[in-house]
Image (tube, one colour):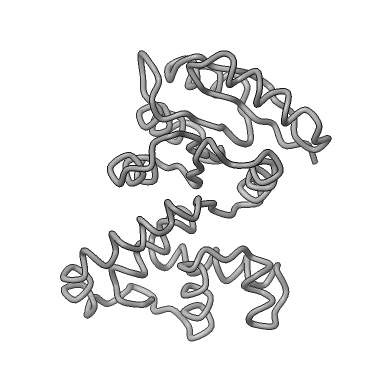
Length: 217
């Protein structure tokens, strides 16, 4: 299956470079380029890409706003924030808006291509330095964790789902989780789908955040 990708960045040279780098991968096709956030929204609605590589700082409408509008209309689309900014405010704003990945622009081309594939499969991708900031933020709000620890879920997680969830919070892929628990990748994916539903999470990143809040991981 070919993964259809939309590039959104206000720097034409960077967009063209990405297009060239991704063109060597036969399973990835760049279907459009947007120079600002509003154009990214318009092209997303028109082209319906599988994945959008979204810069966070763009004119007219920034990446956070564009991501939020895209997700309101195309919930099946997957947005990866691709930016030079790694401050906590931008990271969490992007994740709250619906981005399922957050990568810095110094990422290698091979890693970027694999991140696109993993995102298209339903996984969430965080740059290691970004993941560290997310974990640090969870630690900072430990008082909230304590306050919500006793909260009862409408449908409790099974022991296996809690095991899977703890590995999700570590940023492991479906295959890595499967290898750790000696199950198939398909079974791991099913567990993740079920636990997300029970937690009221739209994706793996939200599930990990919810798990931290509830003291489950």
